[in-house]
Length: 254
Image (cartoon, rainbow, N blue to C red; front, side, top):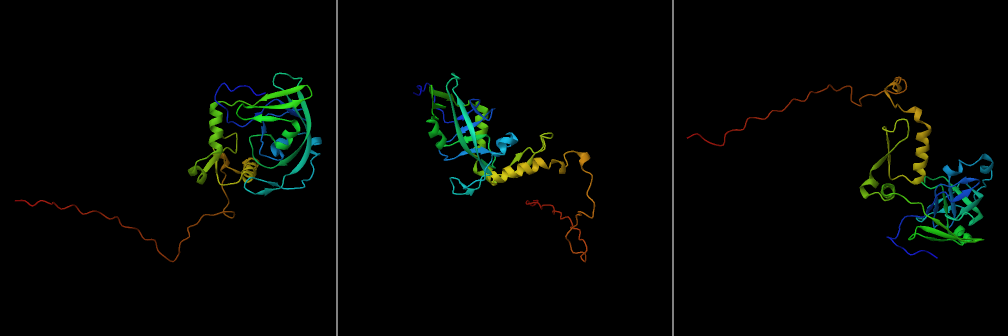
């Protein structure tokens, strides 16, 4: 039974932190999404698993389709055990095998649970209450959603809902943590997958950029050379400055 709402209802997404485990690891940010029909593991989380666990990855048998109709093939499919623990009573535990689709996409979450797994757990999430309840052999367990302070929520909301002007412009990213003041500008119109690939390329090739003066060693002329695209048969013309004639008096002397 859900408690009575004593304050303003929450509209934040349900994110589980520290109450979910898989392969002996604590999942820091597990997102509950009732609108998704599959369970998602993002690549940055998959690469943190042991090699023996990564070896269990199987070839995908179908593509994933988004809300706008676009299709993308996941990196693979992997079956892992997922354990959920009640916030207050550690004896209320539920473990199931979940089939995750590993996708190459940038996300602030590590994994995503869809409605199919929620049905297996007999789980009922409530965005209004900011919690999720699920059935265990010893009773009903409750997990509260991760709370966010106002500043973090404001930043995330601004990132998720850019204005029309921001969508047409670009935004800055930090490619080299050693030089956070030197940011790189990328377009907002790029897809999430393209942004993720671009960030990886920039982070893996920071040595090709000149981050400080000593890095600017010069470029040989046989590699690159600047020149003016002008007709060599024409002579340069200096533009003369135009002066303004003094304004005549509008008044006649008597």
